[in-house]
Structures are given as structure tokens and as C-alpha cells.
Image (cartoon, rainbow, N blue to C red; front, side, top):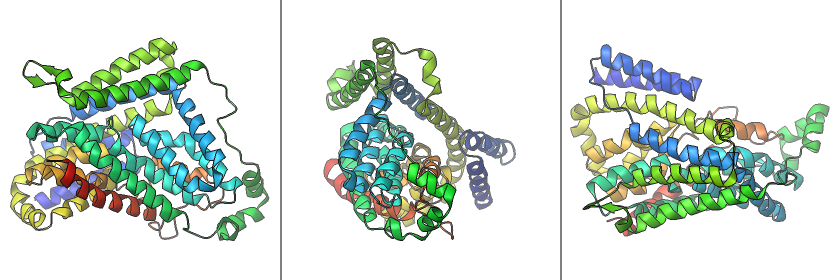
Length: 440
């Protein structure tokens, strides 16, 4: 019966993925209803902590966007890219990595992707090379961001059983490991596929007058917009917030009240809300602009999706794990690295690193996996490039007028598969090695 119920869980997640976003969350609610009232599973607690972290971070990042800070960051990135166009396949993914690192979400890549496409096309570089790499890197960097929900959830859970685990010890593993993944997948991408002028799809489109006009006249830039000083100030304040969070994490005495330090998950929520208010007041940004931005909409959608996914999945695993634990423990103890496959597969289904962390980290902890291994394998929570249905991947395909960034004839031979595998495998291998050094 437990196997049948697990298949039901996967079917609900698959059905929800066909709707995406909020649909994934509410359809998971149907699955939760069946689990509780048909399968008679005791409901677990909803993932309140993860949702509150997402709300706080997204609110501050959305205020930054409304104040013009995101456009300011975009202009800096575009200046660098246009001054070094021949290196777009390396600098494009690095720009996406940095934006995700700062904002805690990979959805900021939408704004820079048309510029990457424009720079590549104007320099006769196959756009697939920097664009697919940038889309993958933007998601890979989530486990390196000090304010991402996945990182904060790992911190909250692991520090509860091992006080030596801090935000710094996690970042000392995830930042260099994902950065190495970013560099390696970018280097791999530099020579992938045929040169642009030799690509059959590009040649076909150039024969079509409509496509030819779009390709030859395409232009995307953020440099023609003059931003107020408040945009730069918003970015500076946001950087101060990030620095403050890292500093407080490094000096536990600052957050100690009585005998016990305040949980860093709480600290991050406080800092994000507070600096969101500071940015709003200093830049005099109208509050009504905040919900209209890309970051706010994407972040709130993610929070609602995680609400349903994590609650339904946690209910099943809490109910089933005692029965499966002995067999699973034997496999994991013999091959600890196999847990990476579990993270990867779940991520493919749920399309969220935070949701994957919320579902699978308690399972890994209950199986007795060590904290260094769990942290080292964090990049494996990004597996949703495998099926090319994630919004940023679809948007990337649409931003490439040449057709080189695509879903292949056999569906799985798409533009994101190879750089995704190179990036995740590299990050996990480096992460496991670094975790043995920095996590005790």
C-alpha cells in the first residue's frame, strides 16, 4: 500500500507540474486531502518557516526592484558584457550567478537574458552557449546565496542538531562549489554546438523574411534609461543588509539573548523586513509599485507552490519512513553518495530547491547521514533543468531569436541538459570535498 501511495504522490506532483506555479501548490492540496481522508495519514505541520523566509526575502528584493535597484545592477552587468563581448559565454553566466547570489532567487535572470542574446548575436557567437549556461547558473547559485530559502532551511535544521554548523560554514562549502560548477559549465559551453553561421536552424530562419528581419533588427539594452540616484542607493542598502547578515552569523554574541543565540533563520527574516523598510523610506519608493515586479510575483508563486508540495510530501514521508527506514538506511550507509540521486530526482518533480530541501533534508537526517555530506550534496537539489519546463528555461528559449537554444527532437536532448549535468556534478564533487574541511 505504501508503494501505491508513493506512486500517487508522484502522480499528483506530475499533474501539478503541468499547471506550474500556484497550480502545483493547490493541486498538491488535493493530494494532501486524499492522504488524510482516504489513506488516513496524520497530517504533518505545514512548512511555515520556509514560507516566512521566502516572504521576508522576496519582500525586500521586490522593494529593491521597485526602487530601480535591479535595473541599476542590470546596467552594471550590461556595461561589463558589452565591453567584453568575446567573453560573453563566461561573463554572462557569472553575471547571472552574482545576481542570484545577491537576491536569493534565480528569477532575476529574465532581465539579463535578452542582453546576453543581443551581445552574442551581434558578435556572431552561438547564443545557446551563453544563454543556456546562464539559465543553469542562475539556478545553481541558489544554494550559494545567504538569503535563499534552501540555505536558510538547511541552516535552521542542521544547526539544531550541531551548534558548530553556522551560515559561514555552509557558505564556505556551497559558494566555492557552485562557483566551480559555474566556471566549468561555462568553459564547456564555449565550444558546444556548431558555429552560429553554420547552424541549420539559424540558416533556415535567415531564409524566412520575417525571421531574418527579427534577427537582424533585434536589440535589447538597459543603458538608454537614466536611473535616479535612489536606484544606486537601494543596491547599496541591500548590500549592507547582506553584509550585516553575514557579520551577525560570524559573531554569535551579537544575537545572543540570555544563554541561547537567536536562530539565524529569524535573524534573516528580521534583517530582510527591516532593510526592506529602510530602502522604501530612503528611496521614497511608492509601496504600491512593489507587488507589480517580476521578483514579487515569482517569489509569491514559489511560496504558494512550496506550501502545498512540502506539506503533502512531508505528510507521506512522516507516515511511510518508519516502514522503509531499515532498507533505505542499508543502501545509504553502503553508498552515502546515493542520497544525491534522491535529491536530484525529487527536484525534477517539484521544480524547487527550497521544496526539495524541505522534503528531503529531514529524510537524510533521519537516515543518519552526516552533516558534512548533506551540505556537500546541496547542489543536487537543483535537478529541474532535466525536464525543460522551468519558467526561466522556457523564457531563455523564447529570448533566442536564432533558434539555437531549444528543446531537441527527443525532448531530453535540450540546451540545458549538458551544462546542467556538468554544473551539478562538479558542484557536488567539490562540495563533498570542501565539507570535510569546513564542516565539523
